[in-house]
Each structure stands twice: as C-alpha cells, then as structure tokens.
Length: 131
Image (tube, rainbow, N blue to C red; front, side, top):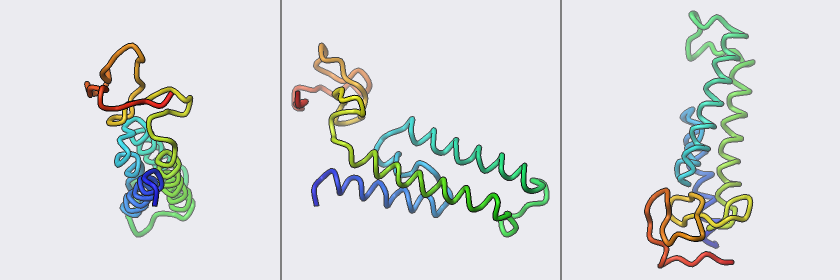
C-alpha cells in the first residue's frame, strides 16, 4: 500500500473511531491539520446544540432520549468529518490544495526564500520540495 494511501486510511480509521466516541476531527488531528480539526469539532458541536435546542428541551434530554432529528444529522456530520480526513490524507504530501509547497513535518505553508519552516522551525535542507 503506498504511503499516501496508508496515511489516508489510518486518518479515516482514526476519524471513524473518534466519530464513534462522538469526537469530530480526530482524523484531522492524526494528520496534524489542527485548524481543520478544530473547525470540524466546533461545527459538529454547534450543529448538535442548535438541533437539540430546536427539536427538544435541552433541560430534559438525556443521552438515551436524544431525538432522531438531532441524532441522524450529527452522525452524518461525524461521518463526513472522517471522509474529509481521508480526502485530506490522500492529497499529495508536500503540497497544499493550491499547489504551494508545505512543510513535511507540520504541513504549514513554506516561503521559498527560507531554508526552514516558519511554523515549526524544521530545517528544510534534508527535505526537497518537488518543483
């Protein structure tokens, strides 16, 4: 199995395990996509709270009595989070979605004039970015 496929598969697996525990963005944490993980987590929790306040009385709801109108969309969003982790993991390593070079360690955008990553301070002399 190629490295990118293995990385994407593990990210999706971690995302599914996190989703089964109700934690969105777990696969993104594995990929060190911190902003994306926080965005997914915040989005799913926010959507769950909005749906819960719309379809049920939040003061009387227990874990066993969550309405289907809330549970099904939240489970769908958790599944989409794991799917997005797979999609992010499968993209070529060393480039972002715009084709700009990224750090092989933290994934931050690189300045071509620097020989280190401005985000994590990794020296880039050992890494070659394909032009």
